[in-house]
Length: 421
Length: 80
Image 1 (cartoon, rainbow over the protein chains, first blue to last red):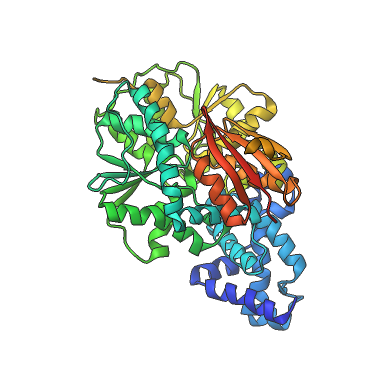
Image 2 (cartoon, rainbow over the protein chains, first blue to last red):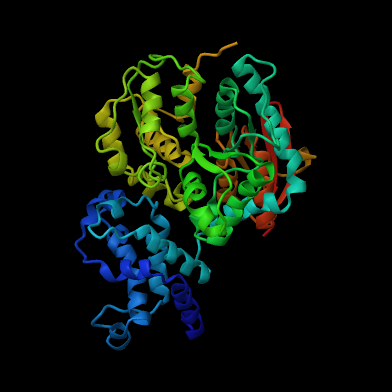
């Protein structure tokens, strides 16, 4: 590797070098407790996926360029230059990680390997080694907003198609999908697909919410790609819309990483405090049920139902009880997985892996612990509020012909919702 | 127009939820030669914006995109 490129890559690490990152890189004791926490390592036994090993690749560069001992006696301190073989290893271990942070939960020092890997992605992007598919999807999202005049009518036509189905679902010809509505209380940020708009529209209509639908989807492949600037710009699309419309809160659909970006990252990225609240749609629906704004029929589902905590909603988002309360209000036989909540196993579908074709076999193999958990419950229905999780769970279900039904929590609510006139 | 165009690959994306139709087109574009055409059929209305946005950002070309009944039909040409 040319010295100039080494300078570029170590410059990225230098720019990202906070006290927190330095502590993560200094403190690992190699106890390897993280190996038993990672669904990918447990399923494959491959050291590439051992969390401490993933972080070790960045640690080796750090030792060479940021410590005197590593600089002068690299062999003794396992310090290393960022050569092509290191970048090959880094790519494989970094873009395979779902960012579930289960390793951090079990680490005695709470080392955030996902944080270290966000630095690894920045280095890979600087070396023009970012994942091509994730980069394309991030660019496509920005293409829509940067050329909005070209896409506006297409997007609105799609919403009109969905609006007709909302009228059918609610039995109310006045039911609508409001768009660009100034003075709305809620800006709902869905995915591009009808499946994430339709049930929410029916629920907002039934609850009598003064809402409006964002013109932009919440999914953020810039985050998965690892480019913080693109990720911020993708989230800016609906955050700016929320400010312009003067809403009181932004409600994110059943999408794990989108919720985490909106709730925990965007203010730091943009340097501005949001003049509105950010909530996950299941927090809102739980409130509607508790306040009697919508009514769901208990026992509407009699088959055993389990709930999968998406890592970005649960362990990394802090939302555990509201989804369970909703499912329990509907299903007469709710069966939690073991372990659950903070200790829930990652299903293997996060991190953008569902979009990376060459990782499909590995991704499905990495779902082994999740499959064990699901089978142990005896559930026939799995509810989960994350698109990536559902795609992975459906993939596992199809691969093994398990006959399970994988559903968004919102769909259970709509099926059990009593429509009032 | 579409009857005159040779299709190199048919993609059935019916039932896939956005953004997966765009993801599948992106994954498969390399399976046709440069200048080759994919005919993709999706059912999610979000694909009407997603697929053209992906094509424009990657330098590929959407020859046509339209609704036929409940389906969204795309002809996508690999440009490079």
